[in-house]
Structure formats: C-alpha cells, structure tokens
Image (cartoon, rainbow, N blue to C red):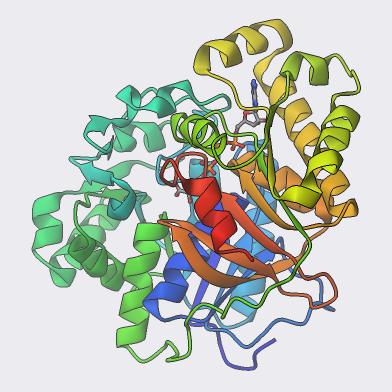
Length: 426
Ligand SMILES: Nc1ncnc2c1ncn2[C@@H]1O[C@H](COP(=O)(O)OP(=O)(O)O)[C@@H](O)[C@H]1O
Ligand SMILES: O=C(O)[C@@H](O)C(=O)COP(=O)(O)O
C-alpha cells in the first residue's frame, strides 16, 4: 500500500456503483483502485490517491450494512483519508428501513461530524435535484422506471422526506439558490443547519458547476454522501488543491485473451433494451427464472449452451424480465427470495463460464455484479477505459488471475452497450 496518505477514501454500497465512482475519480485526476470489501493485509495494492472500498450493503439488513461500512471507513482513515465519501446510488436506491440513513448516522458519529452533505445527483446520466426532489431525466424519481425496481421500488422523489424516514436526526435542504451563491454560502448554510440540530442536508444540484461548489464545501467536513457526481466535485477540488496525480489516466488496455461473455440480472428498462439490441451481435439465451427457482438444471443447461458457442465469439445469458413478469414471479416466490436465488444462479453461471475459459465478462446489474464478483473471489480492480457514462472497463489487480470485467449499473449505458463493452475488452 502507498505510504502516501490517501487524498480521498470512499465506501460504496454496491460494486457497480463503486466502479462508477472509481471511473469518475480517475477521470478527475485521482489514481484510484477499487477493492472488494476491506482488503486483506496480504493484498498488494498499487500506489494510489483514492481507494473505493466496494461493499454489497445496499439491500442487506441495516445493522450489517452499518458494521461493514464502519470497518471500511476505519481502514480508509488509517490510510490517511481525511474525507470519506459514502457512495450511494444516483437514484437513492433504498427502503424506508435504510440503508442510507443508518449508515450515514454511524459514519457521521464515527467521524465526529455534526452534519453530512448529501447529493446523489449525477447530471451526466440525467440525475438532478431541485428543491430536494430527485429527477431522472425529465421526470421525478417516482415516475421513472425506478418505481418498478425489483428490490427497492422508489415511490417518493422528495429526498428530504425519504432520508428523514431513515435517519435519527432531522434532514435539511441546501437549495439551488444557496448552491449558486458559492462555496461560502453552502458552508454557512451547512453550519446553520448543524447548529439547528440537522444531521444531514440534501443539496440541490443541476449542473456540474454545482458539484464543483459542493465538492469544495464538502471537503471542509470529514464525511459526505453522494453518487459519482459528488465524486467529480470532490475529485476536482482535491486535484485543484494539488492532491491528485498527473498520471491518473485509465490503464492502457493490454489484452487478457480468453473467451468473452455477458450476464444480465438487471430488470431495468435500459438493460432490457440493451439485451434486445445485443441479439443482432451475439447469441442470447433468456433463462426462465421459474426453472431456477424450481431448482431445475437451468445453470447446467446454460453452461452447456454457452460451451457450444463461446469458441465462435461472445454470448449473452439473461434472467432479466419486464416489470409485469417480475411482479408475477415475486408474488409466487417473494421478492427477496426470488432476487437472491436468481443472483446465486447468475454467480454460479459466471463461475462455470470462467472455468470454461471466459476471461472477459460483462455483468449487468448491481446486486447481480456483487453476487458474481463475490463468487469469483475477485479482490480488487484497476481502472480501464470508460465504456459509457458511469461504466469503466475493470482489470483485476492481481496478475495471477488476469480478467477484464465491466460491472454495469442496470440503468446505465446506451442500447449498444454490450457490443461497445466487448469492443473495448479485447
Ligand atoms: N426475471 C426476474 N424476476 C425477478 N427478479 C429478477 C429477475 N431477474 C433478475 N432478478 C433480480 O432482480 C434484481 C436486480 O437488481 P440488480 O442486479 O441490482 O439490477 P439493477 O442494477 O438494475 O438494480 C436482482 O436481485 C436479480 O437477481
Ligand atoms: O449511482 C449510480 O446510479 C450507480 O453507480 C449505481 O450505484 C447503480 O446501482 P445499480 O443500478 O443497482 O447497479
């Protein structure tokens, strides 16, 4: 590990989100590595300016999410990180039971911070916030496809209200007029809110210039909460303060060879369109989730199907389904049960693909990516080129197991995502 103090530490609540943030920090000029969980002491990491510790903590019981996030924060502080960003989803994915609020409260207490600035905005992907309301493109969060998410349907766009249901202390707002007033105006609003007993403040954000102001203001505090957009603001502020490195460019793409495959477990509208478009480029197998839940030999069947085709080029295996089909399946089996069983099946398929010579793997879906990466036992990633906003090529950090991966947030990427990713992963 680098003897140099980290310029920035981040704890991410899922693996796709972590790679999204690591990509943004790299682009901002911070050399960044993504680790899977708190690294074991034997894991040799390159010298970096920022570490993103990826957790799979978005949809687990809040107590476990708190414990794992605190362990990650401790590790980052021990490596000199004066500021820690808790990376959440740009669509604020969570339930009323958490986990954003409970983790925020615990990290804030650990850091001795009176208040944390919170903004999941990511304008590059159409996530903006006005008067505390999150917009996805032109529509409020609760009218966007996120209202049908299989694990955490988002039915309220007012983030002050959403976060207040999850935290112990009151939640305030830093409105757009204050943000437009600059770093000093945001700083004094945060101080006033803290003095009035608020533990968190949602910050309005429309443009990247807002994020630069918010990143600067957030650095005066030990903790902030946000998505890749806040990462951009923090990264640019740190680089302007001389804490970055000129050599933060993404790694040159050295080939790893082997077969290439894609797996999709996301049921987002974007991913459904990308699967449809992939049919023009590669064989696509749509798995019947009922067969997975019935314990039938769906995994073996998928692997046999792939083995016959991988020699000729990439393949795509998908469990993804429309919101109606997801609702019907969940009504029969329960939401969490169905989700976990399908994640486990995708993870087993990934392991079978790798055993069969796949070294380049694209995974669509945050929870799905978490299950796959955990099952493969991968421990850290370096950053490669950007495939689409928020999705980089990842290279395993350990030379012993060279692989290229792309962990795609369900909602990210254009219709040609799979073909584009494979083009950059040769
Ligand atoms: N056909 C299906 N029916 C119900 N749930 C599904 C189906 N296919 C996948 N899932 C589950 O839906 C969830 C999708 O979440 P995730 O992988 O995080 O995608 P996203 O990035 O879109 O949020 C996972 O738990 C996955 O196992
Ligand atoms: O901030 C984002 O939108 C992403 O980085 C992210 O966290 C996505 O989560 P999933 O859609 O569950 O992959």
